[in-house]
Image (cartoon, rainbow, N blue to C red; front, side, top):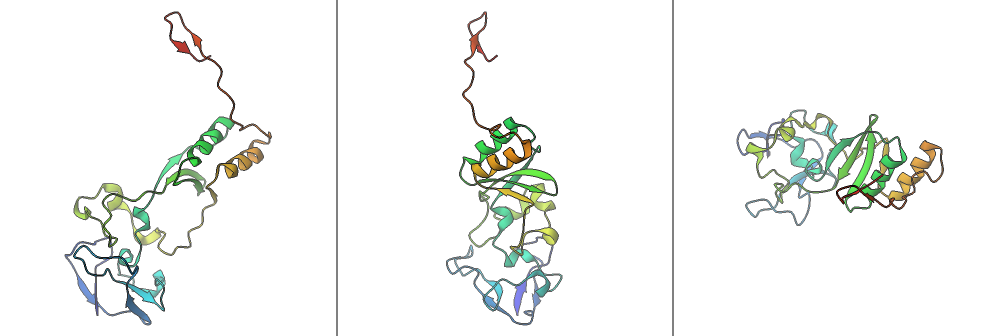
Length: 195
């Protein structure tokens, strides 16, 4: 028997029920160096040394207790679809920074920042669960990336990938090349304005 918290993202110590392991699933620490808040080992379940798939678990189980908290280790901001050389140049600039990627999913474009939430505990639980933001409260495990088989329609991790894609999409070789800025001209008050 293992304590399993109910579905709905509830990781708080309240509302705990007892459940038996699904067939073939054995208790195993998800990471040998992972410790829970009280200093003990943080336990997950494993099927022959691997994380169980969603369909192998009872329907009312909280997937978060089997996951490495991927949803707390990045954030993605939606952006407009790039259609000009200048917009593609911005994507190149994004990708010149560490931990940044650009992807398209369901015809929507996003900038992804690989960064861990400051409130994520070492055992994968939320340190401010009861006070977490509304966006976290609305997030559901029904369509999360628990299975590790998430595939983006388009994924750019290197500036060269964006440059090659832009060249094809804009059908104008070299359109996205970064150029030197025009020198600015001083206005009547002496401030420099770009023409």
